[in-house]
Image 1 (tube, rainbow, N blue to C red):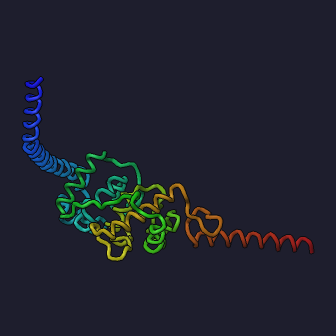
Image 2: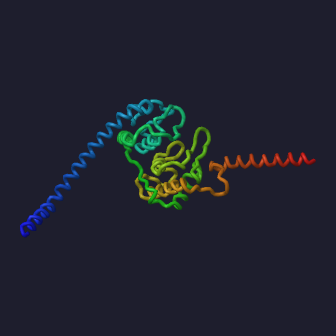
Image 3: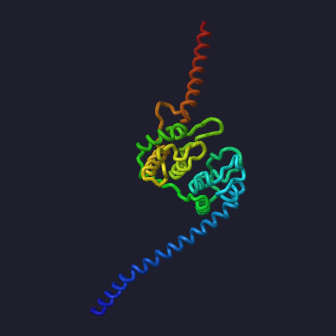
Amino acid sequence: MRRTLLLLAGIGILAVLLIPATGGASTGVAAQTAGGDTGELIARGKALYLQACASCHGPDPNGASQYPSTVPSLKDVGGAAAVDWAVRTGRMPWKSTVGPAIARGRSRFDAEDTQALDAYVGSAVGDAQLPQVDPAQGDIARGRQAYAQACSACHGMNGAGSALGGANIAPTLLDVKPLDVAEAIKIGPGQMPPGGGIPSYTPDDAQSIATVNDIAAYVQSLQTTPYNRGGLPIGGKGPVPEGFVAWIIGLGALVLVVRWLGGRT
């Protein structure tokens, strides 16, 4: 029994002494693996970029596009966040070099390929940051207020979206993910300004991250609890379409009343 206890004590002491060494070795291997994985990821992203993106955006993401008047250079659109937003939501690769690529669809790349494209383009243009977002940390009431100030003019308070005039459209937000919201705020796609209209926005600022979490929480709440104030929403397309519907119904009813009165006389 005494020998057994001494043996177990010796094994315990040896394990305690070896923990720092093995821990440091594991960390070093993990770091080397992560570095190797990053290099492989960027190389894979470059191959995918040359195959699927270079024909429009040019062979160098940091250079001019092949169609400067209609297709932007990727150095100007928001780095990895812009690539992730456009590719993950199926907006890119676009089927044409003309017209705004606003329609969401099924992504042509899986998650790993999208991550590889993010890494390559982000590394090439010097902006590999993807914004942080966690709607569980947000407050819906604060998010509603921030959304009303920064987003509702185009997307509507209920997130239904609307036409902005010309070929510009604010898409619906009723089927988007929190990361879509955060990335769109960071990059400012289309007519949307970078920062999404949030005062003093920077993607790594604590206050900005909190505001994005609040807005994402409010947008997420619209999926189950529509924000419809003022009666029948009529598709939630905003006051102008609703006004047209009101005029049509009102004029139609007035015509019917006039015809009824004319028939009586």
